[in-house]
Image 1: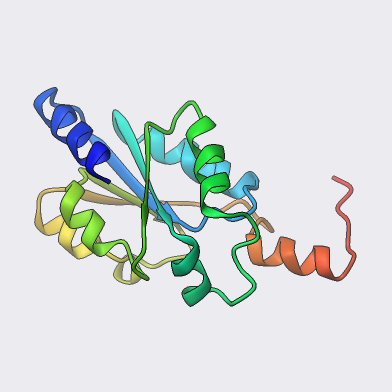
Image 2 (image 1 turned 90 degrees about the vertical axis):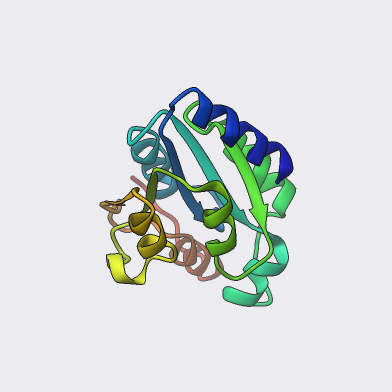
Length: 155
């Protein structure tokens, strides 16, 4: 976390707009890729907050995440439009949002603005919230259900 906070200070000195999004990013799929790509277009640097394994277990279920925190971090860092990845142990990224002070907060459009953790804080501090339209039928929980039920996709 300290490294990312230090880079955030550098970005601020360079007058770069910082975008923040967060999630579990378990079993990366087309929907995740779409949100990350769209988020990166909202500013100059994209920081991704990644729920720790313990956090995922608390908010999703005891049998999640499927992929461990380190693997999820490596995959996210491989995307050309992701500049930084930082994990957090809390159930929400509010503490991290307050530390990073992003210029833009991005979440999927399945969240109403009022439901987005940190939205009010970001707007009250001069930033904005951007909601990305979802890719139809792409969600980790659905993928896991399909795998468990033996379903396969042919498209």
